[in-house]
Length: 216
Image 1: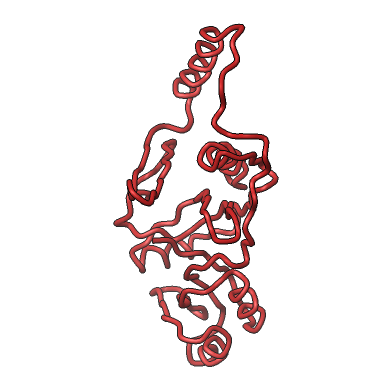
Image 2 (image 1 turned 90 degrees about the vertical axis):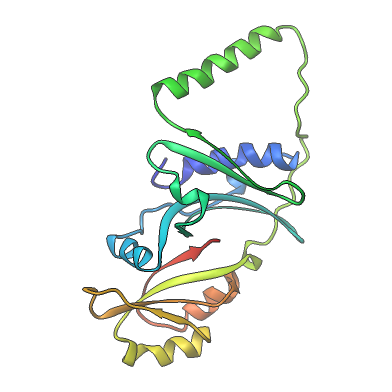
């Protein structure tokens, strides 16, 4: 559940239901786990002053709400970069409050027990009463994920001399990233582009080893 991103997706469905006051389920979330993340990806992230985090993101767009779970490059200066081990964080951006983060343990016997006992006490205090919820049964209008825009980090096999022209023909301007000790491959960072535009460009380049979204 953790490695494949399913646990994060279930938490995101609950949070999105509360945050957007609508009906969101696990099936509404597009999920990508960390199975494809390698030691080489971590080396590139370190070279670029990033860390890799599994993010569960709910974002309001013009055409609806986008719900995604995926690993991403996060700048080391970002508050989410310091979330490690069994700790979780919820990072909220509001139009007035701006950025707020809630941080604490997301696993372990005592934190889990605390949450369970809290729910039991809440039920006991409201026996025989109807408790109002903050979301409705109305299904949340989901946005088209393919329109979601961001930068991407891409690893590709081959040398810069042999592959860079092919890469630029597909992706346009890119920033090349090299890591000492990693031979016959290199990385690059795209400009801001949609998921659909990235998929179209990726199909034109042979030897793509991995791609990771960039946040922040």
